Image 1 (tube, rainbow, N blue to C red):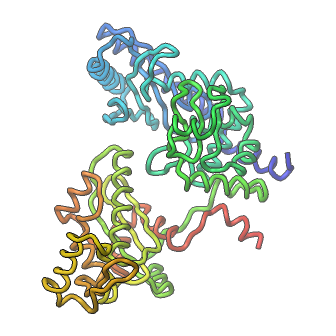
Image 2 (tube, rainbow, N blue to C red; image 1 turned 90 degrees about the vertical axis):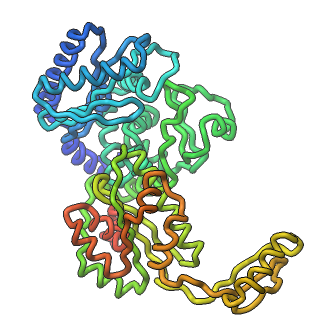
Length: 485
C-alpha cells in the first residue's frame, strides 16, 4: 500500500474507532435495557428473545455513534396483532423502568425509539425465523447480523469503519430515500467481497452502471446480466445480491447520482489521498447579503416555494417531497421556463423549501403551440375552431402547417413565474399529503431577494448551508485538486 494512503488511513482510524470507555458505556446501557425488557416480557408471561442487532452487534460502528438496535424476537406462531401489541407494551414499560423517554415510530412494523443516557435505541418487535423461511424486511435483520459476524475478521471490521466514514465524508452514506446511497449492511458486504477498504475503492472506481453485479454466495453463477436484472429489478445501477435472501438486491436504494459520486471520489482518493475525503470542512451558511451578491452576479432568476411540513415517517415524507420536486420542475419547463437548478430542503418537522434557478423570471408574450397532425379530423376541427373562432384574439399568427402538424403562435396569458406558480401549482404531480397542502393554498412563493427573508426566518436550521452548497459549492473532496493547483 502506498505510504501516503497508509498514513491517511491510520490517522482516520485513530479517530473513528471507538475507545474502550465507549464500548463499556454503550454495553452497560444495552445490558440494563435488555434485562428490563426480559423482565417486562416475563410479567406478561411471554418467552421472547432479546437480541442486539446492527453495527453495535457487528462491531462495525463508528466512534461517537449513539444509535442502537434491539430486537424482541417472538415465536413465529404469534399473531401479528399480538406481536405489535405486546412488543410495544414491553418496550414502553422497559424504557420507563430504566428512566428513559420514548416515542412510537414506524418502519415495516411500529416500534419504539427509546432515549436512554444519550443513546437513541430502537426496540423492534420481530419474528424469530429459521433459515430458508420467507422473511420480511424486519425479520431479515438478525440473519444479516449473523452473516456479517461469521464473515468479518477483527481487521475487516476496521476496514468497514473506514468505508463507512469515507462514504459519510463524500455524502453517499445512507439508504433512506432522502439520500439514495449505501447502507451500513452494504458497506459490510463490500468489505466481505473485496476484503479491504482500498480494494473496494479500486474496484468501485471501475464499476460500470447497470453492469456491475456482486454475488458473494454465487447464487446466480452463469446467469446472464440481463436476465438477473429482470429478476432483481432495473432500478439501481448496482446489484449486490443479499447473501441471506437471493431475491433481494441490497443496493436497490443506490441512485445513479450516488453511485457516480462514490465512483469518482474513490478514483480521486486513490490518486490524491487526503483526510478531506473522510472529514470535509463544513460549508458556511449563506447570509442574506451574500445571496443578494450572488443574484447580482449570476443574473438569473431564483425562485423558492415554502410550505409547512406534514408529520410523516421520513421515507414517506421524502418520497412525496421528491415527487413534488419533479412535478414542479416539469410544470415550469412545460410553461416555457429554462430550469438550471432544482433542489429541496426540509428539516422534516417544520418546513419544506423548494428552490429553483431559472434563466429568466418572465416569459415572452408569444409562444409557439403545436396542434394535432394533419389528418386527425376530430382534433384538427377542435384546434382550428379554437384558434380561428373561439380564441382568435390570442393568436399572433396561424394556424398553419409545419412538419405535418398544425401550428399557431399565440399569446401567453401568464408571463411571470410567480403568477404561473400561484395559478398552476396544483396541476403539478404531488404526493397525497403535499397535494392537500398546495390545494389549500398553504404555501408562499419567493423570487430573488425575497428569499433572504426565508434565510433569516430559518437561520437556526441548515437551510443556509444547503443554499450555499447549491449556489456556491462543489464537492468538498474536489478541494484536494484545487488545493494542489
